Length: 64
Image (cartoon, rainbow, N blue to C red; front, side, top):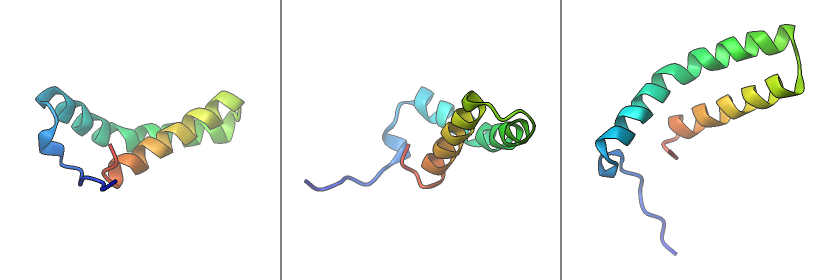
């Protein structure tokens, strides 16, 4: 099965807008959550930080 290249212009307008907003906000969320995890390391905080990092990488490498 051949994998299609990702093209953000094939997405609906609302999805492109949501992706652009997430791309701008994910790094500050990662920084805040990283600082919070350093001071209050709970299982939920570590899970949330890893989720934020995965989303940031997905946006960076244009998987999403």
